[in-house]
Image (cartoon, rainbow over all chains, first blue to last red; front, side, top):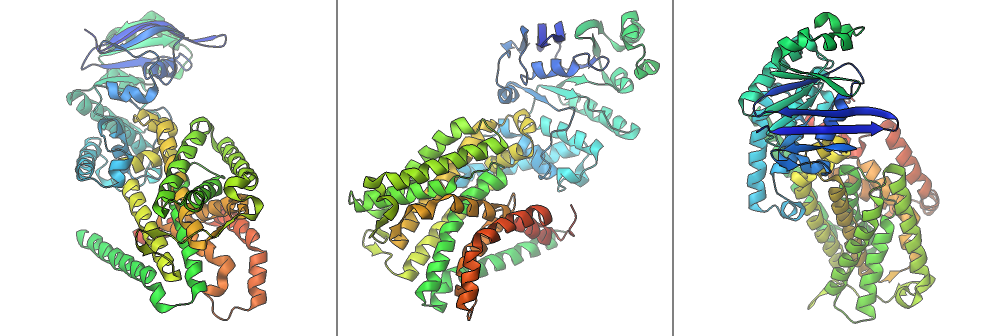
Length: 257
Length: 332
């Protein structure tokens, strides 16, 4: 059975149908990409899956549980973590603190227990710090551990946001345009990080503009155009799909397809 | 690398102990009631500002109504002790419970508001409470206030001298600071700073941002209530003017001057701004007319402080301390 089932999801904004009756599955251990021209509805679909937005119709089921209508902060506990197209880091906090905040959903220490510095909260804190250090190394940010996020270069901030998402020990990781604004070397590093993350057992869904990265890393691709799913399949077939090529005509990405 | 960190810890420990010793030892250096009184007020403000630092400096929420919580605590404790004959500790508990409940009732609807709207809601709360303090005569004594409030006492232990009440207030301030310091260095503190940094990012981490805001608001309200229960009994007299809007503004000035993500900064700011109208307590030989000028202009000094900090030192005292601590030059 598939890990994530998106069924007939529709989302309208006034007269605009941003996502129009879209269905697809994501299987455990896959890297699945969602691509499409600007305004195709990728980010809206993403927000619906992570409960940051509610669909007007359709359902999202994760591991057999219906997520439609959940509160967004609850989604993490069900095993889905996400990043944002515009990174949403905590600028005043160091890289390590950012990743430690990502472990919020899998830790317990509350206000009273921490104010009283109960021994188990100190132990939990130590474990969280250790795990944060490991994740920072996993995405290759060892040297930035104690640097405030605000002082980090853009490309590394994206990697940091991924490390923070991983801190919740997600079964599925959703990345919204992780390669946007990255240079070639940073994009290569990102691709390698994605393989390492998948090898640790996480399923990855990625919304991306960078065709090179998408064709390279993804097992399967969903193509959206004007809110509709126009194609789905492995990269090699998608590259040759006439409707996909038509949708991208006039777009700069067409050369890379 | 490791040795440098250890050195820094040693320096911090020595500095910390010196400060604690200086604060605790003040009554041995001076027996002048006036000076002890002024520093007792500073201690009361430190308790309030500790809660404000959590709310404003860590969670990024503005309250213009904290003087009202301070007042609710003061009147509640004064009332149950003078009118119902309860022991002082009962007054403290009533003050905390009442202000925590008040904080919860105010927070639930208004924390769905953001920025200016939250500020407006808390401002309105402060004004409503000011009217209540003036009009609910049977409880508050009206505009004349309540007098003859007995000194704090715990069983046979009465804090009936200037130095005893000074120690009591600063001991409580020390405890609240310790609790707050534990909090900010933990998962809860990270959640507060996270929602300040990015509400979307915090939500994606599984942080219930409304839940955290409500908790911090309740904590800061009850710290102000606790401070009120100390103030009423240490001074022995309270009236509505002690808890008016200008006190709320003074508290915001302390929080802004103190800086974000810092406890020490706001504490220093609270002590400094408390001392301004009582400058003669720390500057011997300050002429009477100079002091009167300062007192006349004190609101303006507070207002200018807020503006100047916003423009020239957005990190406040806390930011300054961090730069010294990490040895980074004044960048950003």
